[in-house]
Image 1: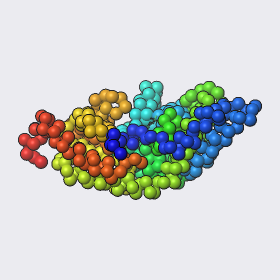
Image 2: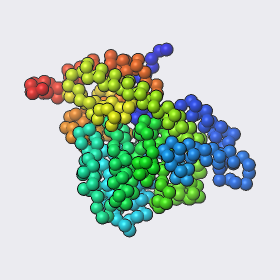
Image 3: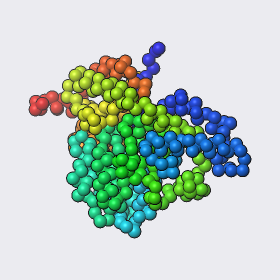
Image 4: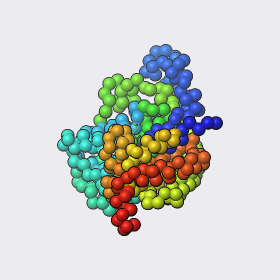
Length: 397
Ligand SMILES: *Cc1c(COP(=O)(O)O)cnc(C)c1O
């Protein structure tokens, strides 16, 4: 087969698996009825399908079916959890704790709340992108109502000590939300065991469709609505259900959890081959993020001294390689990555990062193709780079 492109951007999005798409299709066509239309029989199929999806999601994270709420994606789930808790519990306090390396869906929601009378602590992280438990404990106050810390980071793959954070929140009677968008399908998630009160996920990060997500809300937790309207999702999240999407996310999570062990092993192997290969072939390369257990299996993130991330991505694109950089990202801005800056990288290195994220279609052949194409590209860019010239002159290497 002719090579068209090598996709190494699975943390940005995944394709929808054929098995998932196949289950979704009838809910666009013959089973199209509105699940809320209770007076005719054909609305029963979509109702049952939603129920099955809810059951599959609950099972995958060890929750109850009644604790699963469908949303329009990961960002919506994050917004709902944070604003919903903040508004419903503002009488108890106005302080929220999060980290400096959250996804913008969390950071910008916190910034919005800051403009509306809430106080937010953005916890620093260590050089591996992990929060420091001591600093976290010190940040807790009388007025703290919510902790929102991501399960796994989308740029550098760091996996936080979620169970420990959950325990501390429980001891202090503070709600604990985690953005688990990158974790599902890659890390074992158990909301009961980990004391998680609220958890966000997004279908398109684990081979389900885009535009559908889930917020898990522990039984008994009160939070305000984000989307007001009709009575869907027990009156907590209005809008006619995205039935095909809901069917898709349900099927996708079932498959992801079934295959997790095998897939993690395979991705770890490929990722290590990629990381070791790049370090061997390219001098002065910095691997960003932790090594080993605390790293998402498909994530590799590098900074190459003397190089701009955007230039690198353009040249990789000429070779048919799809990757991403910490800067640019969704915003299209040229800001350095807030995640890498929080990890203490200097601006030059935070600008020159490359994220390669592996997934289902990734093969040894793909990894070897990158190992062949990337080193000469880095060399060419460095040969043109004044930053690199300075670095080589300094002689303090
Ligand atoms: C992709 C992502 C989101 C946003 O999910 P959408 O479905 O695109 O809204 C939130 N958090 C993390 C960690 C992500 O990787």
